[in-house]
Image (cartoon, rainbow, N blue to C red):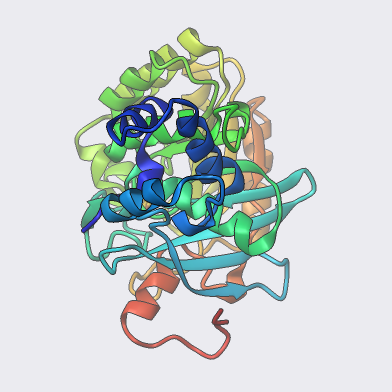
Length: 354
Ligand code: SF4
């Protein structure tokens, strides 16, 4: 299978151009076609010589992402995309509309091996990491499909970003590159379930991103029951690494707390969470997420009144708690559900085909 050329950085494009015996300026032209014009084929690169295009076609594919289908929420316009990769694997991406602009949520892996009990993405384990080009391709495909400028990016789709560390860091540098799509790093959120060594490594990358930690519990026992990663790294180890990250980067961290009915949503838990975070940080931000039910798991979302009560309790600890707007419940909102349903050969009638 040919590799995707989107994965190459500018230096690698320069080496390629020189290998092809072309003058240096062709590298900038090629890079612009790929990352500014975002064409989907070499044939569209009209100012490149035919010989160069033929040689590129022999070695690379341009666009590793093919739109299979998408669903659009009648409630809030959220679009969930199902994309096929060159090897036939399927991934999901989501485009959301906020008052501050368009936000895209991308996948970083095919599947996930982290095993969080409330998540559909992990039910078949990890199949493989996504390339840098496959991550860029999701954003570019959505831009081409909608014609919209993307202002915010979240890496909270299928996969654990820190489990595909090198490609994710390269992707962040490339999508924020001023010669390309140039999304501000400050508008990029990378989410992790808490791979402590990777958080320590990320601290030294000098990125301006927001790091979001999926905490989901305020004690080790409960966290272990929800997230197998907690059997490897305790909450204390995790929050110590988070504090080190904050001290180095001075970038606010966000803690994601998925509310699962009857599991971690009581007032006692809210109090425990407040005390825990205040031990490590003066001011923190907690994003409360009433989880989307997953049919394969026996977990349900917390009722609205209990969500607000949980938020109120956290505020008593001077913690800024927001409730994540529920998006796209009518379109297989939980990450991984559209992919699973489609893989099972059972796409229902509300799907749209291009
Ligand atoms: S919640 Fe994230 S880290 Fe956990 S299994 Fe799902 S995709 Fe993986």
